[in-house]
Image (tube, rainbow, N blue to C red; front, side, top):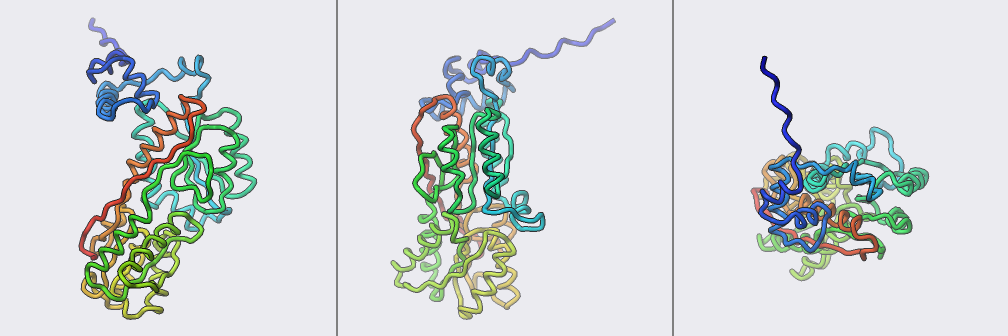
Length: 349
């Protein structure tokens, strides 16, 4: 009688080191998020972890380190909304959130760290959240904050829990963050539209209570001023598809001879372009349109959208690495990492 073969032996640190061609210590430093590892060696170790399917023994390690092997992804909204409100749907339909999660998991799953999704949208939920975090349920926090007056970044710093913020904090705060140079990205959009010879250029901005909205508008206006246009018309949007459609209707009312527009997110552009089509405007012949993000929404536009790319997945992966370093090196000073955007030219401009 034949017996089933024994299950394969779980991969060890030594196995990963052998496949990567590095020392066991180097593998350990990569797993623990050490900043001193050469990027090429880190990539080799990450590939070896994936190829060997190595899974760290978090249960054994937690007995020694008193860590949970999990982090929280906290999304902070300004106020409680109904289920029908765009914010709730945006959590699961906005390409930005999916890209952030993808980038975080790219790093976290290699080291066996789990991620909890948590929401905070009023004073009570923020207080409850901080209390939960202080009880040691997670080792650190990635925070996505949606408004400038959010008290949560400062609340997190007071707990001394390792935390990394997605985007520039609205107020100076001792918290690490990762962002793209939002103003530089908006300048790319302005330079491109002006370079096409457009003379009646306007913008659909992001929300003015968000640093990203503020920075993109400021960068666009500064670049247009350098091109001789000191009175750029702006209509505020809300970073949603429906908001982009409503903002474009208002913009056409204010500037009927519009021939170039910077829309501060691809998702808003996805809503705005059908409004232009409905008014008989051809793209790019009558109106040149540039978006921001280079998300899946840019390719869903008709025609495909020329847009400013911010490398969201890479930014999120860096957030995860910063957080792992802060967890493994208590007392590490806060730091910021800024990525440079690029222009992706397609058929809309």
